[in-house]
Image (cartoon, rainbow, N blue to C red; front, side, top):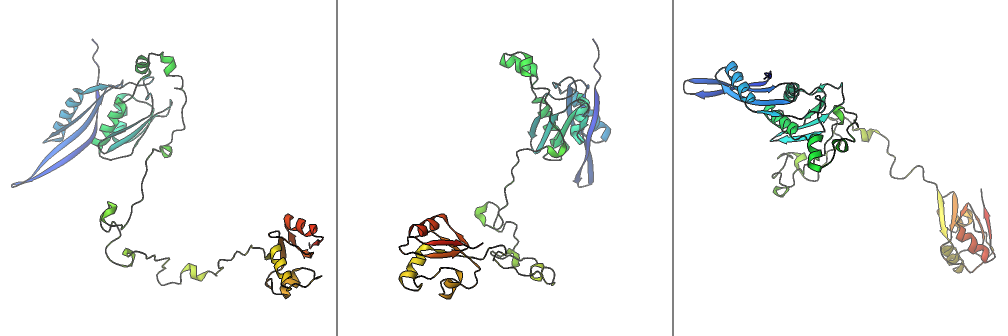
Length: 319
């Protein structure tokens, strides 16, 4: 029987110090991954008084806990995986041939000993190598090969792998997950689940409610005071006076507008029906009229024109 050769990689070494009555005692822990570059991988974690002893114990532990990882074409994953173990969270994405191992730390060491040649990976949780490694192994184990899926569903392998050749543009800045961050509610009391003051501090002007210190520039005149004021009026607004037919009829009945008087902007400003600041006049069709008017305006609505002409009046448009 052919002997399988396993190779190990040291992921991390940590020194533990215990303070006792006589001084300090040092212990070393080692994290090791072992694989045969053909889909088998094992993880070992051990402690010893010396670093070589800890590595040896961790390597033996890893060889006793080997698992088999299904690989696509012997080089990459069958599908994308998001795995979480404790505080560790990793995203592993299948990649086309020639991509290489785009990963670092514990994930890279694991992928190398497993035999993965093309993968894009990102750690999105804890940076502790033990947590990252556990999440990585969990993600690799959670894969489903097309052969297993075909057996479960009772289909042919070709039906399961129809869309296997569709690859996406894989870049590290496009690795987006459905992660939602909610805004921290600062200083909203013990009912906010964030504590009493919740990040607002305890003293000073900024810790008070209803206070906003805007653009303090160290004693210099602020920018918003150095710039000229434009106010709230739009400088693009057209200076046009509006008047309705009902208003004309009311003033005509009260004899503020004399009969046979041409209704234009100048005459309406003389009778103080329209402010002198306006330069143009527009007539609107709200209301009913009984008398005959001669109108000279810049703009007029369709309904107003029809009502004036119906009573025998005349409309002149000034261009």
